[in-house]
Length: 422
Image (cartoon, rainbow, N blue to C red):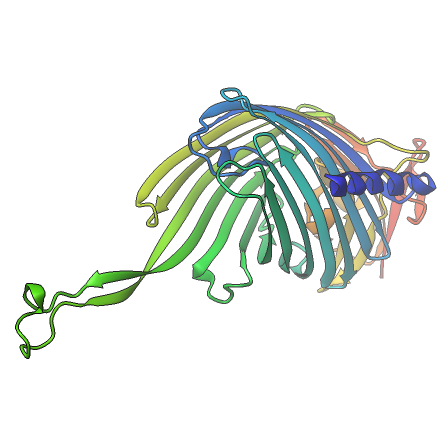
């Protein structure tokens, strides 16, 4: 818990330093109600107990700060949550904190992530992790990421297990692509470095396909598969003769043989989730998950499910000068102009300017990793004025540009940015 408080304190201090001229801050307040037939499917809890079949409430408050300058980016997240289980006396509460740093090298980025979480009620669970990572941007809309590191997990007062502290060395391989401005596909494979490259001994794989609408709402479908293998030695009677082993000299009698038995446990998950922004502050969301455990170890097959729905309130606090200014970066890629904007938002961003005849519908920017938005344009030589439009639900606003962006007066009391194409 002290690690979480430290991370949240760092988040507040560094984002308020220097009037936060380089920081973008967001606060998110969520509340949802749901019903799960296994506590493994409850938000953040994730501890297997199919006997806990109950409704629940999950309320959380999170602060996220994001900083970007000279190809360096830092994001700091801290939050507290409370989750009462209706049909039991368990009222889970806890918090988490995470710090993420990345440096962009053209088509690659390298970074490190560290964090900690704490959850307590009937027992307490503490988790900490640190993992370096490297990301390859195969195109403006596709990346592949590799990461590996250590996970530290401890339990106290758990009725089914003794107090323990363990370290796990884990790896992850992630992939994301935007086939179009609306479709997004993400996939990942995770496992233990102790069993790598024998991935079949234990891994977790998932794929999510989502469709994003122009107003910032989305619908997603998720497929998950987990597999764990265990081995043990079984002693069997080989027979080989009559009872007593037969008369002397009659040959070998009965005996035993050791056989290695391998069992595989599999967990299949199918889920869907959706969100709908009501305006630039409020949005509603919902999810449903089906789960099946097929265990050879216990010789059981278990089916569980979870459904939930909730509301989210999100706002961007500012300190001194506004922290919501953007600084577009333009590069020439494969003969096309590529724009990159670093911005922390749940809505969508659009380019509007002379290159689309100021059509307010705009050219959508696709969100990459680390809060980076990008698009490609095929433009002839010349100068082009443009703006960045943020759209969330029915709310729209023009984003102001930073002092590092070359701008001109738009004639209406605001500014247009300028793009020069040679």
